[in-house]
Image (cartoon, rainbow, N blue to C red):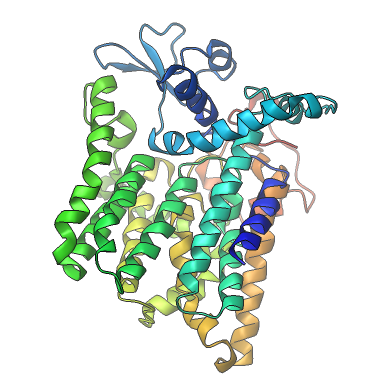
Length: 460
């Protein structure tokens, strides 16, 4: 069953039409740089750097000074986003590229007018990086689904565990965001499922709690907001598995030392600039915008968690009713709360830029899905009306997230009629929600020729 689940999720996601290689677009290049040159700088790709206007890149001088958007770099070009994800994804990317090279004599017999697909057929990782990303991301999504299956299997029969894993993988942002490209959320989500599974196993084999320090530390190298993983799960070990706290911290040390040493060697600081982004929503002058972010991440037509995945209302109800499925459950509920506050406090971009749906909640989709366990566990015991409502909301979520994998129109919403980053008020426009783009007749686009999406934001 796990193998069938893996293959089903991988093929469903990997054969989807849309790949969103935007913020993640340098992941493939970093992997190839590590493989060919044993470093993470991108100096060997001047053409790609120029063609993308140095997007998501920073020039770091020998003294650690960082500059962006400059014609000539007197130092080295680095991806401005965290290095942890690309490093962890490197084996997958290298494997994909080497398989393509081995199959090139056969694949080269075919041709496509689509530049990305044609590059894929000819093992050109530069032209095909978006498609390589999508396949690697789909692999990680499928692995997360299998981990969710093993977690659910501790509480549910096989069939219901499969259904919960499929709901998580295909009817949430796990599919429409994490499966579309190698976003930071993609490895973060997988690491979270591993952490949860290890903690649940630790109830029977407490010594496992010490080893959880490794994936928790790795998560922080992948995404800054995973610092909340560090805080919540370290506190959990201190309370629930105090005997193994030292072991837990020791397991995290090698990752922490390597990560900090890497930053020091490049930036002459223990953290890169991206990790020092201020969460200025906590300043009194920004409280109003902070409130907008709090509401927007839950109910806005562009990014609302409960708009795009309405079945998670049942998960929140489980949290409020304290339907704890394991000793870890209340800690996971607390993690959801502080995560919502943290991502909403980034008032300059609470809507997560150009994307589709509640991207900032993608990392925590496994947690929300797990709080649906009480309903799956007592499915025949709940009323017919509740079951109908549950299934209806789950199917709505599936339909909305399916559009994220198959419709380029939902991404065009980000730039037409105006760039969402320049006109964030559009996040509240119910007359033109992203999920309806391409389904209903839209008004005339304004200044479309002057608007540009992030590089390779989607493919058709």
